[in-house]
Amino acid sequence: MKEKTIYPGEVFATTADFDANIRQLLPRYDEMLEAIALGVSPHAQRILDLGCGTGELSLKLLKRCPNAQVVALDYSPRMIEFAQSKLKATEYAQRWTGIEGDFGDWANHQLVLEDGFDACVSSLAIHHLTDQSKGQLFARIRESLNLGGVFWNADPVLPESPALSDVYQSIREQWAAQQGTNLAKVRAKTGKSTPYGHSQPDQLATLDTHLQMLKTAGFATVAVPWKYYGLAVFGGFA
Image (cartoon, rainbow, N blue to C red):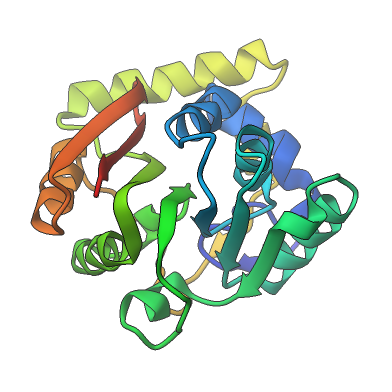
């Protein structure tokens, strides 16, 4: 059977598989997203979700921030459609706006969104950018935030040594086994990722490299509120 070609970030050939299978592929997925949500003030009014995928992070933010409007951006038509269907079935539908677009274009001012966000978040998306594009995006995020606003990103990070790479792989294997499967079975449901827009297959950077990029982008305070082996939540305060 021919492998389905997908955009970077779509991961699985069938969109409906994403929510269940990402929880088998990545350890503590919900805990990671919850760490982002907890890092956003419950009083936030406007939140930007970059690479929103199936809307799981948006849902956690809408639940935590009862007065927030979430603007969710994703270049995948099928992800936006899936997220919209999911949100329509909740009490939060009127506070969520899905936009089909590439956050790389937004970083370059080719896609216009009104600035003035209290928070910007992203999960499992920015690691598809080159380091140069990551830096441009971080600077654009900093520019878009209100004073005191926050940015949190959840992504895999590049291991600093081959020894750590082996450890990170073993942890993921153990996690999959605890879910009653194995990585080979989960990965069999993925598609073949090809470059699209500003994104490419995995372009990982070390956690330290990310933090240096954030400082260069103008974040006065950077932090890592959550890390589990090769996965991390990191960001900064405007």
